[in-house]
Length: 258
Image 1 (tube, rainbow, N blue to C red):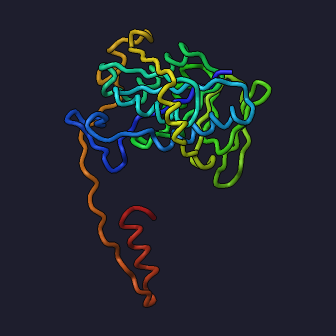
Image 2 (cartoon, one colour; image 1 turned 180 degrees about the horizontal axis):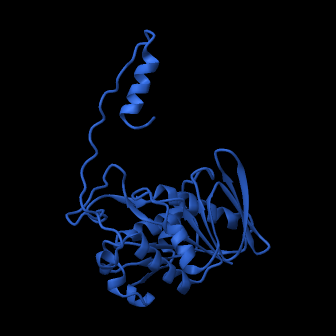
Image 3 (tube, rainbow, N blue to C red; image 1 turned 60 degrees about the vertical axis):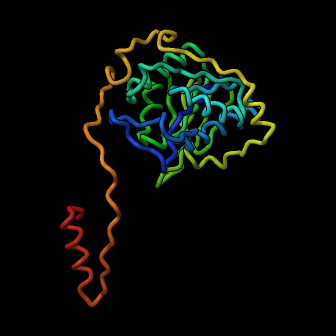
């Protein structure tokens, strides 16, 4: 069985910024493995530890520094990794990202694709279903637990009103939430072992993708402007003198919340 985990190289939350072209800067700031993807790595490694006979490959698309993200994932477990790196990828949106990742998955081969529930930079949560759609495989998303047996994957999804159990035939794609449990901390020995595991680098040409299908040329979305979040302002304190309920209602109506 082949498990492929999608991981992303993202800026540190306190360092994230836009470049001059209004794309997220991933080269001039400190970056790391997306925290939400760490849960996907943990779940894939745990499946193997629980007896699922599988190899694990980590897959990412990003600049040269994304190799560090793959090394962090490999320190947690897994066998090897694939890094898609090409200058034409700069400025790619979710649509073109899903194209590149799906082409890479076709080349790698897979039975189960595991992802985080979203990235900590864009937080869109749309790439996993886009990838599944391009591959033509079932997607079972927002899993708080998963297991594999008899050619199928079973997940638990916890909603506001119910806990669902969803089963899908393999091959399939699963996105996991941060409710799946703690992520292990790699030992020094595991970190050293991760540095020795093979990482293969592919370009767009290796995947049969042209430059006009990705980057700013292939993007279906464009950032027109960006501005820092305004500082948080002090709230209004109401002392209930018998009229507080009316004042709250007026406040909500004034902001079209009621």
